[in-house]
Image 1 (tube, rainbow, N blue to C red):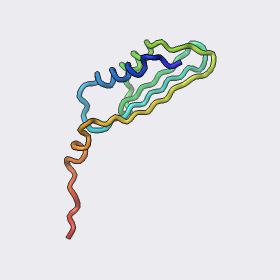
Image 2 (cartoon, helix red, strand yellow):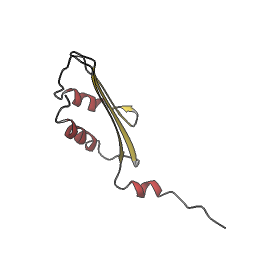
Image 3 (cartoon, helix red, strand yellow):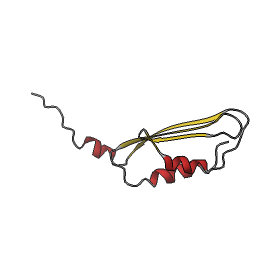
Image 4 (cartoon, rainbow, N blue to C red):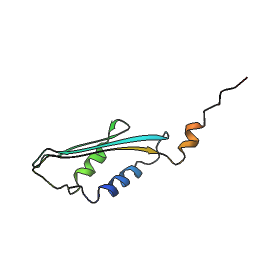
Length: 96
């Protein structure tokens, strides 16, 4: 029921966002098919609707089922240089 190209499509969409500000981001994907041809998509990136991703995911070959089917995916994305950016303004407490 899950399209074979879902992983590759998500990777392309995430990498296609370009340079991301901040060190940590999150992505939430929901796909629901309550039965029949109705399909519900929601993709949030940092709590904002990601319309481009929703549009691309709708075009994938999702199998239609007469039974309820859903997918939920939550990803935390951390930049490779996150440790450097996260701790760059951190100063250790001074002990006396």
